[in-house]
Length: 238
Image (cartoon, rainbow, N blue to C red):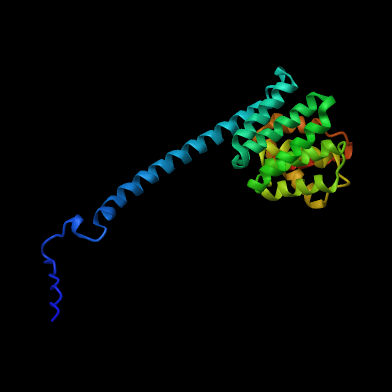
């Protein structure tokens, strides 16, 4: 006759069971520590990556001011900082690189077309990361206009509309947007004309010198008078 199976004794509820007496007790006890350690490692790695990307963005934004070192060295600087970020560059880095390429294209006509193509490609990449950047859309429009010889092509007008849709008033984009609308008054839509008139009046309230410079660049006497009337209407006491 077979022996009866052993009776399994229950552990008293009032008495705490040691960790090594539980199934997988030691593993469960060590799990929180491992999770905390893994979390700290991941957080440190992410913080380091973010700091590196922010540094790359700052370097790329300042590269546009470094034309005195020559096109080869400045262009190499932009390319190397972009490569450091790879596909995870923040939008500010792409915007800074696009501005640097555009500045280089203006300073060195012999490589203008290639640099403008790089500027447009980088500006588009930045806008894919941040499609609500009014300054980014304005820069793209400026680059496209430069590639088109200053003409108001459909691509330029689309970038201009997107820029105003992102922010109707923007200090970094205002001068180019108003100047371009004034220079192509008969080609832009009535909505863009009204937006440019309102933005110049707004710019005059925060930076009178910049607004005066924009007015000085308007060549068409009719358009210049329209802007002057808009400014006078804003300045009159109510």
